[in-house]
Length: 66
Length: 107
Image 1 (tube, rainbow over the protein chains, first blue to last red):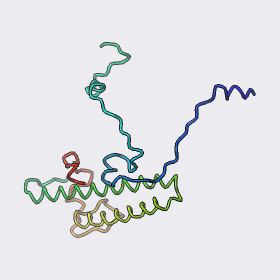
Image 2: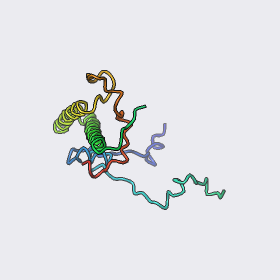
Image 3: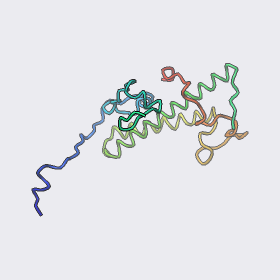
Image 4: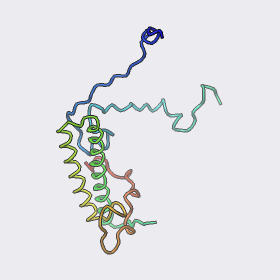
């Protein structure tokens, strides 16, 4: 088996940093934010114009006009 | 189907208090789950274990207080019932509409 075939180009690897306990949100704040840990809190920004059609159920497929 | 007798202020105030109590219980339960998940990957973290145990204690107290005032949170197996049987004459916890709950006011 040609080992080089698997190493070059290198396969994708997943790395995560081990979480360390630090400050935590209050229980009520955690419930509202969806996490107890401030370091894990990074909500997606909601963009009104981008998803307007999705909300109305007017999503078009593959850019084709209906 | 259970009905909510609206109209008078004391009833509305009681319902709001019930909502707030339930939300506090949900918040402590969520905190317990979060710490539970953290401890799954950090089983030797004493501080996290301490926080988890404190959360569980607070949760027990809140549930006891809630059930004392508003009736059972579940219908069998977890708490004793009072006379007359209360399960049928309150809104069930999942029937309460939290959308009308003032988010800032509950903290």
